[in-house]
Image (cartoon, rainbow, N blue to C red):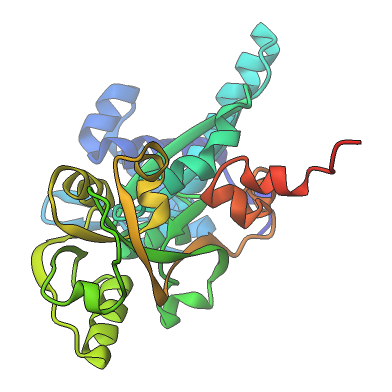
Length: 309
């Protein structure tokens, strides 16, 4: 089937029903007979060779093919609206980039990734957070262009996705007060600590390291959200195990102090995209960013700047 065989009138009816979630209400809103609306969607399903809806009681739910079709329909009709607006009003077309980020990912790191895009007047960013599995489903269905994560996708998904490591940094132990003579690992023995949740790769590696070294820390709190961990580290006397990018501003301002860098412990940041014939034009610039610049904006560019003569 080539594109000439797709009836875009049928596709628009499908799009309207998918957005509304109800055949009867959509038919009333479009002022067409429900039977005619149903018939045209069935013709579209025949053209595409897959059912787009399934019934659950009285509800219409999208099938996997329906979710994919909806994502493409959104792009098609959004582009059509932008085309009309551009020609009618002379506005430059915006480029929309849809980014998903794992909810536990450092907000500072996310800001470092998107900040150059915010400086471009013709770019519109759509940002959402969630758990990795759900974000990858949306990426695979073309509802997202990019997912930022701190672990790669599961093996069963990796064949359909591209995963690129874009940055890696050591993990530190930080505290709200300075302490001279701190030594790793003895300085941690018996210390009250704020740690990432037990599902975190950092936490798993830290627990294994402590077990190997015979160190016993006192867990004051287990926190999945890095923003919350930053607040607790700042406002308590406990030590916190965090990647330095999470508390970058607090370290710079002297609100928090680094006690040590944990040897052999790193957080890795990944950019995950889906296999597409035509990738989003903005992605190449995002993925080409210097690692140092992502972790400390401006530092990567400063390192490459030639010396003054």
